[in-house]
Structures are given as structure tokens and as C-alpha cells.
Image 1: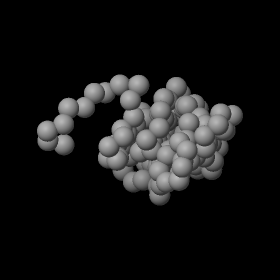
Image 2 (image 1 turned 180 degrees about the horizontal axis):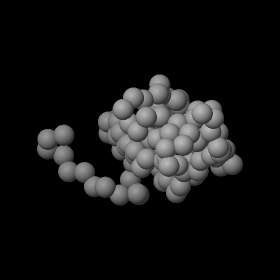
Image 3 (image 1 turned 90 degrees about the vertical axis):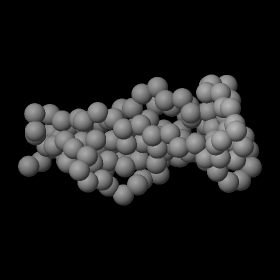
Length: 129
């Protein structure tokens, strides 16, 4: 964006109509090369922060994809809603992630809302060979 000065701050959201893509790729998750069953992933973030109106930001989503082979190939994207405005108790989770040996998670957000991620939880168990 030539000719523009932007300030990075938790107090401002983009009101210029330009989409801001934020991506986080987690470190590899593995258990000594054994298969690990991943039942679900839940994001601990600001929930219920959708904006009034219709369109982008009304029901914010996290676009999730994952790799079961250490980042060589990726799943199709899944959309995980974080809750419309006022739905503060919503649980932002996706299920049935398979039995990988080397799991990598990627999360992308673009909605113009107050994004604040605290943590990400995985329900894991012993996988099948």
C-alpha cells in the first residue's frame, strides 16, 4: 500500500476494506513416530466478537487445515466458527482429525474483528496402526 502509514495495535481494526490475512502454523506434534488419534482441536480465543450487519465479520471463522505427514501434504480447509456477536460461551472446535504420526496444524483468520488467541487444545489418544 504505497502512500499509507499503518499502525499495528490491538486497539484498531482495519476499516479501509482491505482484508488482513493472519496465519499461524503450529509446531509438529508427534509421539516417537507412533500413530496418535486426534479427536478434536479447540481454539481458546475471543469468542462472540462478531460485528453487527451482514457479510465478513458477522460470524467470524478460523480457516483450519492440517497435515498428517509433517507438512508435505495438506487437508482441505475447514471453517471453525468462533461465534456471532454475544455468543461468548461458544466452543470453537473441529473434530475427527485422524491418526497421524507427524501432525501439523495451520490456522488462518481474515475477519475484521478483535482476534486474540490464548491457546489451542487437542484431545489425543493412542492411535491405530
